[in-house]
Image (cartoon, one colour):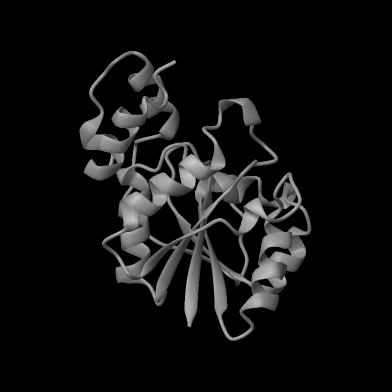
Length: 191
């Protein structure tokens, strides 16, 4: 089975994430998408994150109707900060028959050479890349394991959603309906 690993803080998960996941399921050879919720991205400050179990719950709510998508809390159990190579090594040991593929935006591909053991990742894993407006084409890594896809360019960010909620804006159309309902019920991101 070929599984796409969509890593992120998902703080919160929004329709852009869902559109990309759906694209990779429908228009590539991936059979499943696992949303790997990062407890701490080494490049982001932890203080801006909603608690990891709340973010896991939001992803589960977003994908509850889709059997080809799964929320993964695998990184909650691994040492922090989370390094992709450690997660991949753990998943490969746990699921030796699965073929894992990384899904990432072009912006992450630009800084991929800064990732821990990035050469090992390229040696053993494919990377499926989606476009990002802020990416510089000249700085993108070229490699036989890197495949670029013409997925929809999504202009929604979790940062925008968090700021909008704090300003008491209605962002219902930016989020799966059941996620927006839960965020309002729990008063997430209001302060």
